[in-house]
Length: 174
View (cartoon, one colour):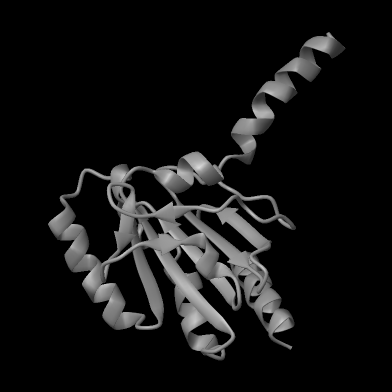
């Protein structure tokens, strides 16, 4: 019985870990270019851009785009130093039935609301496959200046998680 339970736990652990990057590690490099994806403003995006500043990355299914509005608003209200803190929103375009033109209109609206955020389209679930982020969800990942993961959550953040996220950013900016 103990052996069976151990095998069951080992089989389930990868599924439970899906959607978060390991804290304290740097994920493998990723580039979204051409058929894989692009910046909403045009051109390639690379995870190498996460180095040099503290970055928050939102990886979002367009159908779940409002799931973490409370976290977005808290970050906006915190008004962190623009030179030290940056944000990236990567849209999982393959996770929705919505036409690209509808998503484009939403992104243009979001770009006006959050002008400091870099918006990127992931056409082929590259971050789902290469970073094991959750599909059909909303992931938030915080990186330090070296590109190391400080915080990674799949799904809606609780108030306590939002406060933890804000605290980690403040701590790293000092």
